[in-house]
Structures are given as structure tokens and as C-alpha cells.
Image 1 (cartoon, helix red, strand yellow):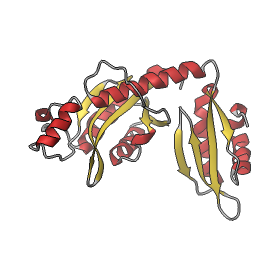
Image 2: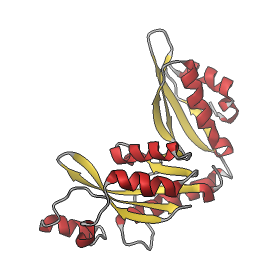
Image 3: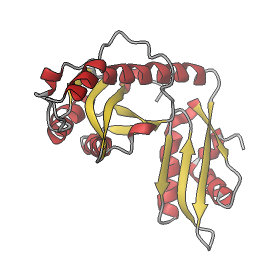
Length: 232
């Protein structure tokens, strides 16, 4: 993961509608660079919609030619990522568009990871479009975190939940390079999750949160080799 040349970063501009957040534009930064508008089924004749699009760096007349989500995901974005790793921002993972893109990337032989980096504050970028600025910001902050972690591993917290018998039912990791929750059905699934987490290698150290799941997590982490990078 320390080879940032193999990483592609996703930026998404969304609009709030009565049906929830919808993507209006998406951008890739890093190993792949592109920007596309997404058909969000907006009323492009409404002045309020046109003003909002202009404020986000989008010409409303161009939005009329936006691509359907399915075509954009399968014909453009997933092939652009290829077999590299797509870095997603954790606040975008509730979008159906992003979930479907992640599946398409993996089906194409690529990988996805969810970053816990916050995109708060100034986004330094020469891009006019908001989605592209978000992709650039995620990329620059992620690469800065890698540079720091190469000197001293960044702490990632691991926690979980257990059933009445003490068996793990979920695993959660929270940190810069991974911010995700997995539901697990049995010990094999739990081992698979922890083995995947270990791909962060020397860039991350792991701390196990106190609680009912801590003991089971440490046991499985020891079996998966994850404890070699743990701090507690």
C-alpha cells in the first residue's frame, strides 16, 4: 500500500433530494485521472438547480448530457481503475453508486479500501469542479499520511461485537488507511477480515479497544499475524 502510484482516489459531489443523497459528479485522481457528470435526474430548468450547479463548478447545460450511473460505473470508472486499488472516502460509502462501483472494481480484478481521513478545511487544488477537488484532497491527505506512517506507524483501532456465546459477530477498524465495519458469521470470516487488514503492513499499528470482543479479536489477530503490528 505504500506504493501510492498504484492508488486511485474517488471524489464524489452529491446533492440532497427527497430520496436521499445522489451523486451529481464523480472524479478519479492518482493513477487514473478523469471527471464525469452523473445523471441525478435533476430539474435542469429550475433556477435554483442551475445556480447550485454553477456554484459547484458545473455548467448546467453540460449536465443535460450526464451519463447514467450504471454505464458510468461499468463502462468508464471500473475499467479506469483496472487492477489497482480504489481509495474511497468513508462518508461516501452510504451511496448506492459507490457501493456498486466498489463491487464492479473488485469484479474487474481491482481492490477497494475505505479511508478514515476527513476532508475538512481548505482543499488545495487547481480543479474547478467540486468532485475533482475532493478526489485531489483525498489523494494529497492520504499520501501525506503515508509519508508520516513510513516514519512511525499510524494507530488504527479495532473493536467488535460478540453474541451470547462470546463468538464474534462483527469487526470494526477505525483509522486513516481503513475505516470500515464487517459482519462476520464465523471464525473463518473473522480471520479473513483480519488477514485483509494486515495488508497495511508497516504503515499501521493496531490497538484493540476494551470490551467483550477484545479477547476474541486478539486471539484471531495472533493467528492471522496481525499482532506483529499491534500496540495493545
